[in-house]
Image 1 (cartoon, rainbow, N blue to C red):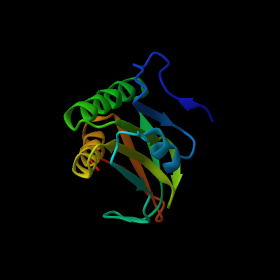
Image 2 (image 1 turned 90 degrees about the vertical axis):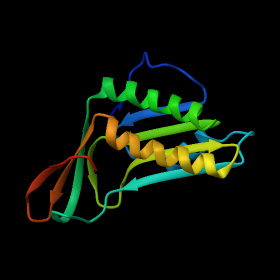
Image 3 (image 1 turned 180 degrees about the vertical axis):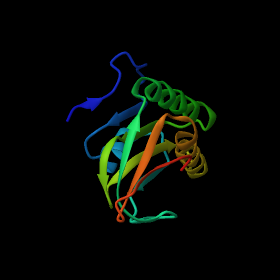
Length: 151
């Protein structure tokens, strides 16, 4: 499987943004935000759980509008750097079919202090879910599949 990113994306050595088909690495995101000026690093890893309001889940499929997702993720990373004086930001999201237990998204932030790292990380995942064109379809154990909005 190939990595799905835009080659003309804005470059900033403080930012790692990627939408990809292969497994995510929390360690890679953590390394990407390592910075000597950081006194705190906060990492959020979202995983596929085995249940939802609709029933038992056997897996998820993520689809993305790649070009727009890349733009929005870079805008979000820039906002996190500026608003919370973050040192570095990593936002990596998976697309394709995922099994229960697999990591679907990683948001990592380093900042001079823990409050900024926590706040920026929380803002990052909440904004991604709300504003970035990445969609989730749940496969239920019953055989039914449902698109899930706003989660």
